[in-house]
Length: 308
Image (cartoon, rainbow, N blue to C red; front, side, top):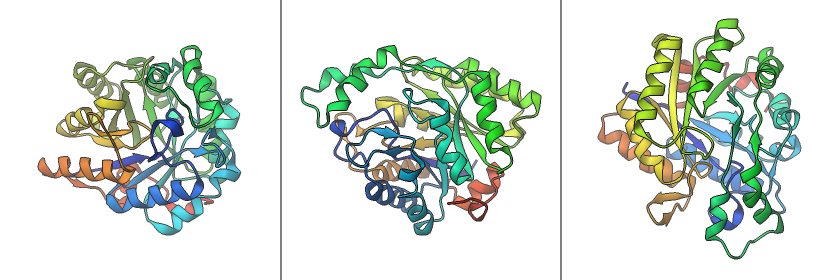
């Protein structure tokens, strides 16, 4: 594969403002960071929203409305709205923005898991906002709910809109869950499988897991029916993405997944991570796919068919 889709997940719901000054939390910051990532070569921008006052995760469509139109006007990248939100939100709240804006693409978590990041609290002694410490520390008790009923509800809610999904698979069983929905006809090719490694509660950051999940996906779906990508949390990010590209996959970077650019150095921006993976891809003879090339590979409906 000479063309590789770069997705950039610009803010997410795990990292908190105290952890990095570069993490975008206000609508203006999210807009500017998204546009810079697109300019650097990201074909897809994966978006969460934050409370502008304190950076807490929110699913409020009114907050999404403060940056989605600006991003669409400012670049040609595919806008991908989360339906994962955060582990503390209800499924209805997580779906609210996607249901309102009917984007080309949404993320969709393909199974229920423990979702923990409490270890990050050990490195912080002073928090910028009161909500942050309890949110992080209490993640040892979070269950990220994504039942078969939840998944069907999200897919069916957006089926008439023609929205397609970044199917986030945190473990081997999630591929089989996706196969169930493919076999039932609710998910149709071509579809996009995002394999996730290194989140406590999901598949561990071992390269054997990556190759095994890829072989399993090939067997379950047939290589002609799906595109696949990899993201890895924290320090595992670039090593896993390099391996994914060697195996013919696409890649996802962004401050949602890792706050660092290299060991011991915080990333200055989302765009810096896009630029780094672009350099790595270039060394392999790959080029970043344009947004329209990504649309063609993933069978997306186009930006004009959204309500952004």
